[in-house]
Amino acid sequence: MRRALPALLVYAGVRALGIAVLAVWGYCTGKSPHQLLSARWDSLWYARIAEDGYGYTLHLPGGKVHSDLAFFPLLPWLERGLSAVFPLSAGDAGLVVSAVSSLLAAWAVFLIGERLYGRRAGVALVALWAALPVGIVQSMAYSESLFTALAAWSLYAVLTGRWVWAGSFAALAGLTRPVGAAVVLAVWLGVLVALRQGKGHGERGEGEGARPAPRMLLGAVLAPLGWLAYFAWVGVRTGGPTGYLDVQGGWGNGFDGGLAFGSFVAQRLFGPAFAAGLGLLVGVGLVLWLYAACVRQRQPLPLLGYAGAVLLLALTAKGYFGSKPRLMMPAFPLLLPLAVAAARARPVRAVLTVSTVVLVSAVYGAFWLNGSGPP
Image (cartoon, rainbow, N blue to C red; front, side, top):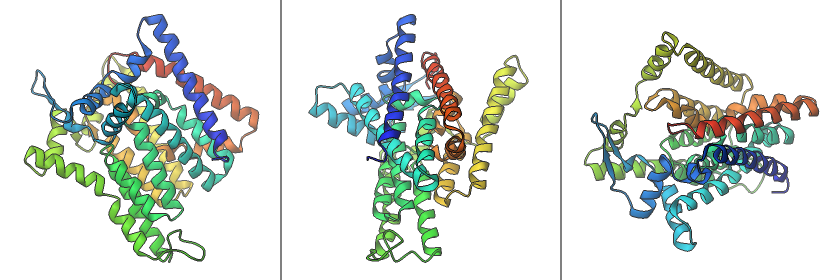
């Protein structure tokens, strides 16, 4: 904790600035920052599940059917638990979960960056993750902060050979978001790498007194249990093995290899919204370039597998395309090349560059959250 304290202070400062800018923006536009953070879009669905359980379905014109079964249960469980203990509404409990989870996520993100590339890179990685253009979501009653915390701690446990912890965190991540499958992949890749390197005999993979191989196998078995359990429960509830996919289909979501997203970009490139289409194309190119940089950086295979799976699931899914930046937010290993560059730069230059990014992110986050569509 002492090593991570500077990174946590940086993270808290970045997020405090984002909330402050949102509050000023709300004062000027007459919108409540508290409502924007806790009582709009997905936050309302999570709060309803926390208060009433599953079972709410909304039938929309055009044939779409929005069922609350699309939302994984860990966040509403925590909201319900906090509301039962403290005088908090479900939405406010969600804000507490996100605030605590985001700090825990920043802690694990720092430890991963520090372990791989040094302390300065760890601090820079936390600052960059906090300053993502969609970083304001980390302060919302959404599940991204909770998921990223569980995913990051699972990845750190994989890198340090703590297999039961890795599998346990992965199982909880699988109860948080469908992209929990990416964390399962990371754990399994970590096991394969450890076995290939002859480290299957130890819990930590190094040193004397290591635990026997069954702990590694236990971690691998635990990892997918949360994800599989929710898919199976939805299947039983809906009466079919593809129940969860059918629920997502009712929302207009699903996976088509990126055809719908490609068509969405093309319509803008060849229509009146050319600038928006070009911006989307540049954004996708930047994300793919960052992933290629991660590969050239020779990041550990579990990190590459995790970030690659998050990107693949985000870019090949159809649905509301405005949410794609949010869906990619947990892929923090993509920022490691930039964090290493910032750590190697002159301190003044690094601070000025990151500070500029932080300020732009705060303004953009307030603008984005005040828009008409969900983030």
